[in-house]
Length: 153
Ligand code: CMP
Image 1 (spheres, rainbow, N blue to C red):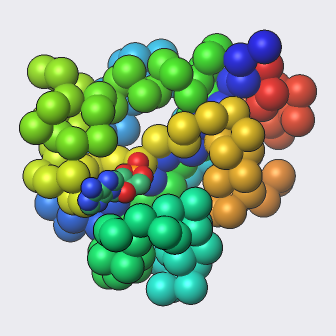
Image 2 (cartoon, rainbow, N blue to C red):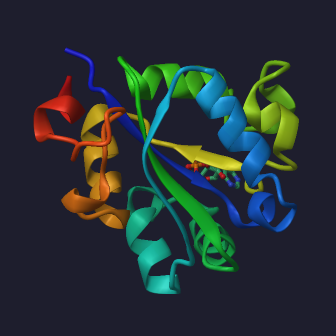
């Protein structure tokens, strides 16, 4: 069964360009509940850990440096089938190939500076959510703490 949460990061260049409000508005309008939200900055070590699945990729080092280069906004988004639905909303990794109207097409600059991250699987969504948020920092649409069963679908 598909999970109900995904983890997004509004990346440093999008935060610096003050796109955060516009991006969150699009996310809300698409029917996602913002279950957790914070403005933060990853250390180099945190960014390296977050992206360790890409360790062997040629772009890994620059990706880590970029993601640690300034403040980001991290959020847990809740919706049925959240991972897949959010990937549709943000579009392909390369903004030049992302469909019109998607977040990456609207706000991304390059494949690295592509405005937002979105989890690529339910397992990773849970892991990535744990990277930024404690269980008591997650809320459902009624304002109650988000229970584990509300996250796995
Ligand atoms: P994200 O969804 O955050 O997950 C991994 C990131 O690696 C991806 O978005 C891109 O920003 C980046 N990335 C993927 N492929 C490339 C590439 N070929 N060159 C540079 N960066 C890349």
